[in-house]
Length: 516
Image (tube, rainbow, N blue to C red; front, side):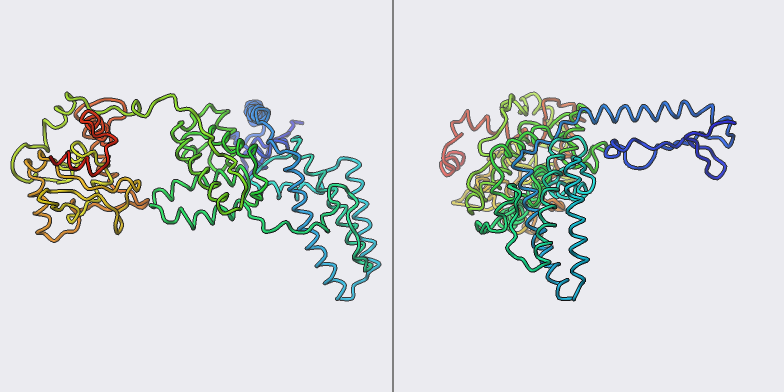
């Protein structure tokens, strides 16, 4: 008789169906490997079965290699004891209340004592046999709260299970004592001795509390785009340290764990399908296995470690922590800032401005004024794209007879830094080309914005569409270079400012000299 091993018939169609090994469920899921054999004939299904089985074992072997590549999560003995101690304290309060409520309902004390005795004996047996099955759900729940997904052969996991079993035995003994009205019980296990006598050392603060407090006190006041930039930082800290982590237990070693995670973050983590839905540490491990590119030194130092150090620094000032665990942690950027983006060469500027929409004539440009004046403002004044796009008509004024541009926040307008606030005389060349006349036309129209149709996007950023248009223009005119874009004009302006001796000069002196 033909064998039907691992063959499944559904509505007349045959499938190869085989469960994955349990130790691989964390990587492959609990659902079995099932593939259609595309036939309603058992004989044909049996002939096609070996190929389906080959595919099954290919997935199993790949998962085994991935599992072997995963490094154990580095939980110290102190970390394990802290987790077990926290659970023990919470359980003492919960079970004491349960015994008190049950006693008031006139329950059968003999039955309760017998049940508690049996439970304590089962825990003793589990400890003797190194059987973690009964406590595994508790251990995994505690680790999940800390943003960790470890188990099975991991030494830290086995240590935690043993500590929790010891704690559970003490809880049963405490319950037995309370049932007979003896409130003097104290744990005999040295790992938990004194826990019921130890006074509270004062208010404790968790990582979750810190993140919410910092978000309210600091981040909520920042531009929406900057607030959004903090989101991956929140996720990383929760994933590496855990939402409920006591801040006073986060030491320099823990800071190094955070730093190591940041350094190994895959570039574009949220957009990589293979990493979708994975806890942050698992995503980092899989990214390393897949050979994915990691984030740049600039992103490590600025967008992550700078933010993280500020968060912990705030906690130190609030006396929630004694030291900043990531202070001065950064990577060396092998590329200097000046080498990361090219300025435009004179030849490139001639190609760029030697055609439409720029016309050197004394009249306002046709089409989109932003596309005409925007690049010129960037060239002659070193403006950022957002500073240009959010200019109001009222921002162009006259000071002591000179046309000037006020770069300032207000309303929905935001500046990148506090130092970005400045007053700049309009360059004579822009005046000659008709910029002031254009401003007066806009003023006469009663429009508020200098360039119509400009507004902040959902992240609070200005000028994205303007920047995209300019990038397309460079491509059309075959103007090529390292990361050329609107911001390259700022490098041109800074280079000229240095040559003129204005770099580092106090701002008001710079304004006077530019106006002269």
